[in-house]
Image 1 (cartoon, helix red, strand yellow):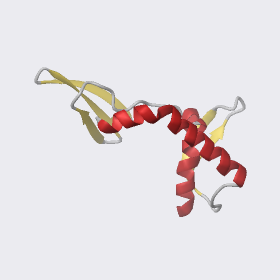
Image 2 (cartoon, one colour):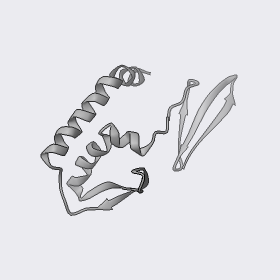
Image 3 (cartoon, one colour):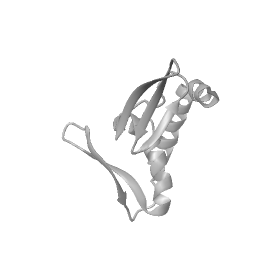
Image 4 (spheres, one colour):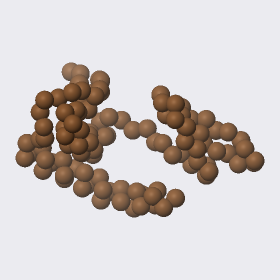
Length: 113
């Protein structure tokens, strides 16, 4: 569950974000969580990257698609396979590398705030 609430405190607005019961507060007036789609997460290679880690423990994040090739459900699952084939590995690294090239400046700026 994700909810955003603006609270007025000492003439400043603070963004309070509730993510599954954990509250995060920004001292500045900017959004700290930007919801994205599972499609974007997958297309950027990030689902592949996370699953390479989860496979070590026999887990994966699995998605099911409908007839229109739209992701209809995502869930964690126990799996018996480990790793990916060479073609998937090559494509995964290319997608993650492209994501980093396209977002490096923003990622750096966010880390410094």
